[in-house]
Length: 366
Ligand SMILES: *[C@@H]1O[C@H](CO)[C@@H](O)[C@H](O)[C@H]1NC(C)=O
Ligand SMILES: *[C@@H]1O[C@H](CO)[C@@H](O)[C@H](O)[C@H]1NC(C)=O
Ligand SMILES: *[C@@H]1O[C@H](CO)[C@@H](O)[C@H](O)[C@H]1NC(C)=O
Ligand SMILES: *[C@@H]1O[C@H](CO)[C@@H](O)[C@H](O)[C@H]1NC(C)=O
Ligand SMILES: *[C@@H]1O[C@H](CO)[C@@H](O)[C@H](O)[C@H]1NC(C)=O
Ligand SMILES: *[C@@H]1O[C@H](CO)[C@@H](O)[C@H](O)[C@H]1NC(C)=O
Image (cartoon, rainbow, N blue to C red; front, top):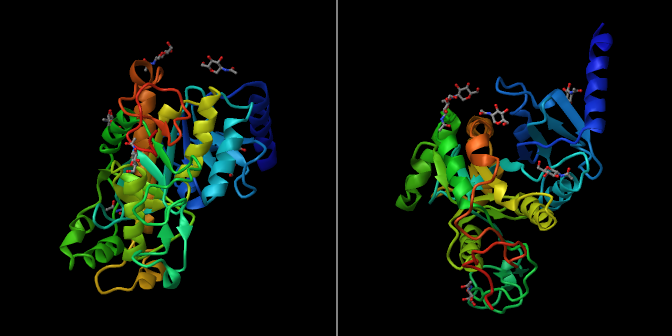
């Protein structure tokens, strides 16, 4: 009975995927199962109506999920910078999809800087910076005068602008689009939890951490991408300084995660060939933990024991805030989003690979 019922659905899904190219209005980009599953079984739309297998995805997440009408899809890249770039590249190059008008909503959880925000907050970034793309010495062997083992590549001192540029150091997103997304997300009633409240209260002893002690909210602040999952004030400060240096003071160090710049690298390359519009990208991260310990706590205690307090609320808020963004884009499609949101800032990478008339206010300069 069960098999008899599901067979026709499976076949129609398969033939639709083969016969027609899917041109989604929104692709939600998640990075692992909890972030992905929070979108499944929701009342607003059903991402499991089509499962499309394409070569090059992670073996853990081998399908792109889409609604029956193909308007909303979901890519699950798997975790870390390499998985993020490889899986996104697979989607960008897939002949099963036409992504020229697609909005990409990067929607994952993150660590957060307690000087800027708190557990369960939702942060929309304009900059994603690959902060650990640097020289590294073990801290016990670091050069004299250096606060950590990290030194920008091609330099000999921590404050020098990197001179070996790989091209993935900084991505700047469309701020006008970000403002729309923030407006939509503010419509959400964010989740919070007793464990998040208790953990954030431990940060109150240092007045610098005031934002950590407030209720969760929608933030506009930037994101650090790094394969290195770190905890501690010294490294956090080093990466905050790197973000400041790489963006010539424009970025506000706020969330920490392991994928965004990988996804953005693949999307930027796709834009060069007209396969995607990089100006239609939104980076949203919800805070599940802090990037440094509370006063009196050790860095290792924060990392080993502080990851659960805000986790459930952060994952819930990926959906609660994110669904407002998805629906806002669909509702406003005809009058605002179909033609794209005109950026008023530089949009692209550190090498100015993309066309565009506004020059960046960051980068190594001439
Ligand atoms: C798509 O895959 C999910 C599991 O990931 C499954 O629950 C769902 O039924 C599948 N949808 C179709 C149409 O086969
Ligand atoms: C993709 O969609 C756009 C917008 O509808 C259209 O102009 C373009 O021809 C399509 N590309 C392909 C390869 O079908
Ligand atoms: C907020 O949500 C309501 C109900 O879903 C919707 O009608 C309204 O347009 C939304 N407002 C914004 C700014 O997204
Ligand atoms: C957060 O979500 C959980 C799980 O759905 C729910 O039990 C709880 O009541 C929610 N809390 C708030 C403050 O929204
Ligand atoms: C948007 O435009 C399409 C095509 O012209 C039309 O079918 C659709 O009803 C419009 N949607 C809204 C919400 O106005
Ligand atoms: C960014 O800062 C570096 C180092 O001070 C400088 O050489 C470069 O010209 C600046 N870039 C821009 C676009 O102002």
